[in-house]
Image (cartoon, rainbow, N blue to C red; front, side):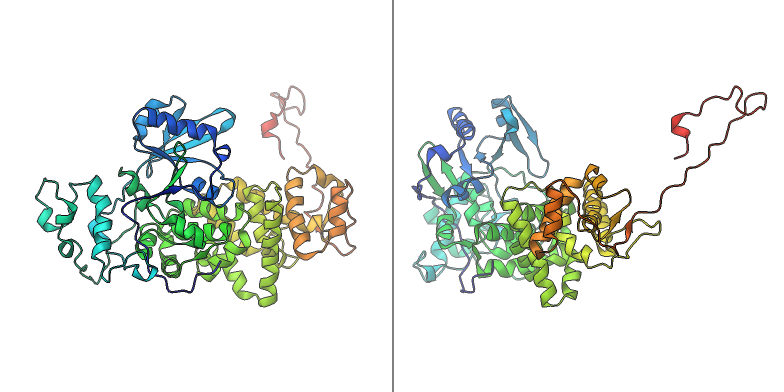
Length: 517
């Protein structure tokens, strides 16, 4: 997806929620029955609760939600006390998981407020050009923004004149110019990076602290209505990805939102609003501040969803691929236009198979995306022991992911073995002992599925793929190198001397663990 080039002013959430009939109408049959029961039970005990986030978004665009999340005014401990089949998780973001039969988990989070005080966030530009605010100044918008904050937190310091006052001040009496005076521009901007997110709030605060407007929608299953505090319905209708509030501030708070924006844009085929796109570009340098395992997980989410080709293209356009997968980015930079097109062909073939329902675990996804790099290495690339190896760039990448991003070594090694197996499957490398014995390899099925990505991307070796699928094995080419070292020489076992010095007599048997391999 590309950014929307139209100059669109930034969005400021409405203080009063827009409660409208769900339209397109959300059929109750499409809702998760257990999620609805959890919402109703919370309400029966006096708590506010809604379906929230991605499930509401997907239902409104006629997609099937991956899961149903719930937001409530109940604290995590109160949720745990109310549902015996629940437990609390998380440190940075404390929430409750409610468990059901069949392994289903419903995530219940407490309404959050932004950890950053409202006074630190600069006022948003007017949206008068869009017809939402009809005044020529931002005073009316300032009052609208303050209503929700003052309604839930009268003790917040909104201006020096109110700092020592405990009395509730009517909204109409608030001195708008005093509260929303132009911020003082400092040479060094404040650090907005959020490393703790357990400040509880209300529904309106929870909606405002979310990343994108299309993810800030609440749904009341009892009334059958969508509650929109952030103009998410407008952006769903216009098919735009837009941050809630100032895009630059939101990206600086959590640079991983850049990856989430890419995922939503590619998954929903939406455009990215121009100011949001510019903020995403600026946030690339802050990605290194984020947890490496979290970056790895968000990267895997991009390719698990069947949109790896557009996602990687957009990440490269944003110059973020150099941070997430630097060896791959370097390799792409070395390719000409034809080589780059060939790589995107592999990514598109992977997306086609994933979207068709073919099972791809993480090691297979990673191997499929790194396969063009591996195939670019000369066939004679072998380790010192004579065993086949993969491209040095891939070896470095896998080692880096294990050491810094906590990629499980099992996944890294499986990815490496799958890549090594590709030349055997294509008949470009002979396997000692015959190809039919390769079927017994524990990674044969996974390797064959990645080989199918190769075939679909290039339309080569289709006959070999058909032979493997029918239970046969292709005949390697005559000039194909052998895979692996020569046959292992049988080592001669030394006889152990007995107590009297005689060989063999009375010798204790050698324990299996100490026998030479």
